[in-house]
Length: 124
Image (tube, rainbow, N blue to C red; front, side, top):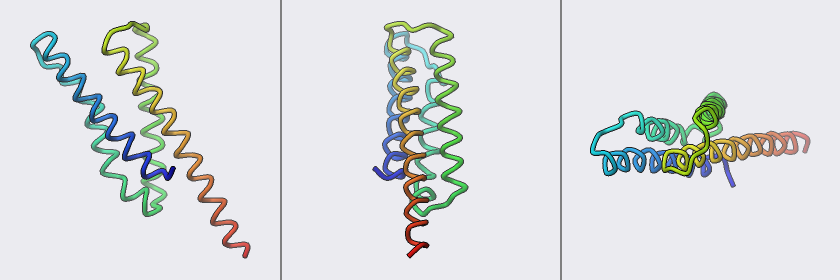
């Protein structure tokens, strides 16, 4: 799967999970927890960079990988610091952490494949 398609899916997942967490908190407790929108904001940022990764912009591609790595690491740290529970927040955090590391692996594999393809084309 091409990295730009993975980026779209990853971004939409974050937007959806952030909104789910935000609305779930409101429905459950009747208050707004604006920090639940952080994944949605990150998803929108990454979604706006999809064109750059599709057009082989190396700076944007590396920025997406770094953001994904930092975000996945931070979410994993918070998840294990607070302990695994069976509540909605832990499920959202676990989904975000797993999707971050899967997306990162696919990004890196896509970049390696693209580099191999360029080398093969240059050798001919």
